[in-house]
Length: 301
Image 1 (cartoon, rainbow, N blue to C red):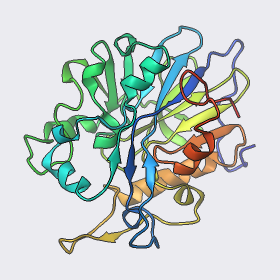
Image 2: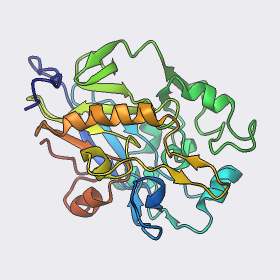
Image 3: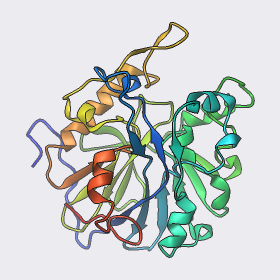
């Protein structure tokens, strides 16, 4: 159970709707851990997944995606991303659209795509989802306006999502849920909350999804942290010296990111909540053959 100091998650109502959550293969990338985790060695660069997720609403059958992983055509990303990826391995054995087809779902039938943030390993290729509305955090709108090519140095693409089908959340974050002060009850029935997850990149959002009618949850944390040890408090967020001599953090607002990490950390006290980071290599290795990827479902805690 959550401690007395930790706000509890909402109790299920009668005939509570929930979300069936499945992982999706969406590519892999080499993470230079010295940029993410304080105290990492200079050669510590494991291959990590860039996980995406399928979510199906039990009552309506509505099918949503959280993140789109890595697109195959990396050369279509901005020069800043090309430079970032120079000398490191990025691998797309199966893209999100291919994962959906393998799981029996036509990408054209997806009506909603939630994008945690605009980094290249999360936006995938929106062209495979011609009928979807794209949901992003409100601050992502300004980020897109000043992305590449308008800003030649930006690592984000102005065409990452179709703006005519994009919805940017602002006033929707009108309630608190558990440890999170800004949440949006997407279906209005307590089955899935979109969480304002400030800190990593402007507009960064997470998803808190109920996974059964009796009190189990999964928290899709995106890039809240890039290593579970940061989430547990065993390690700290890195601040690294860049080749240009500047000291930078992978999070655009380190203080806000660390505050959000502390909030997510409280969920670890609740055995009915599974917290998943987008790049959790250990969870991937432990579960890749256990039926959690579409058409399988992540079993409730």
